[in-house]
Length: 59
Image (cartoon, rainbow, N blue to C red; front, top):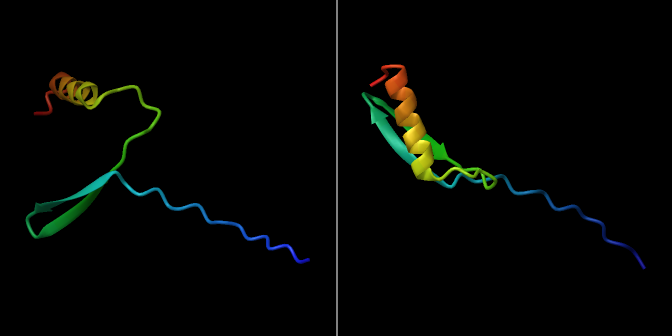
């Protein structure tokens, strides 16, 4: 009896979402993904981004 030993290829990690952003004549396609092990919520991330922008006067 012959054994069939095939290996399955792991699928590529697909982003959780994508969106398009157009700036002038250039369209950017942005892929978004989130860590499954992260403990931060979206609200935590947004607050941290805004706080960092204020600290660097980047607004």
